Length: 339
Image (cartoon, rainbow, N blue to C red; front, side, top):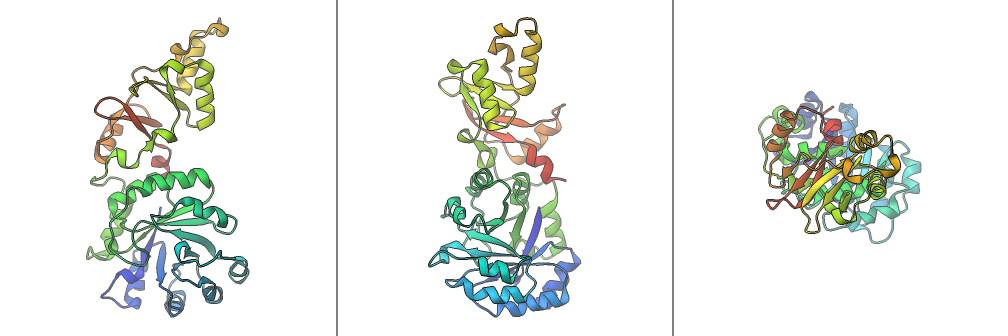
């Protein structure tokens, strides 16, 4: 995951000092917030002249079109526009003509649904999810953003995600493992006294933990689940096919986790009945004692669990203290996020 350093979060240094320091530590982007002030292009011009690090511009304005020409004159890697400030739908065709090499994004606050992106999906290559007040530094991360990330990925596969607000080392770890492309970091980066140490914390694989599995796991409405009384071989296969997750979970009528069926379990069930496949019993494919974790477990608990499991994990059911299924952790992005 790339780190976009919010240059205006440092209150006691000149822009020249900030650019030099961040370049020394090889930050990925300079994040530049524009609260309806065209003078922002003076700072971008300085960045373009003195650094090869690309500018990541975020515009908060009731009249975003007036910034199109300035973006075209500068070197801007990507620019996002704050959706809540639009007075009417924005036509980005002129901006695309003026700045053909600039990626366009739509920024939304935590109170706006991701469906706002739909009307701009043709022109925008990414979404910026704001978890705190746009243009302000030092806010607390909104954990509801984790679910919003998954919803957006499902609704707009192929589009990338940037997250801004309250990102620290622990949040960075979770965002990487959810497949987020980049994170805007401000106060955490500059309040630690040493930018290099903060950047290292943002990218290291193991962190202290305050978030619990239930804060970022996939919820029941996002994963394949079959009630035990409705379980059939065909139904299990269809769930696996529909969700593309290589498994389906099985619960009792009261929601207790009763087992799961994975692609490997299906294979073992077929081999067990290879001589009479037309009589296969779906219960021959059920793993009735799958690995699982409590929803109140921390990230640290999760990492220890993975470390002491003697085979690669692709998914992990999550239950509450009453053994009721509450969600699932997938490990696809855990692997991608650490490469």
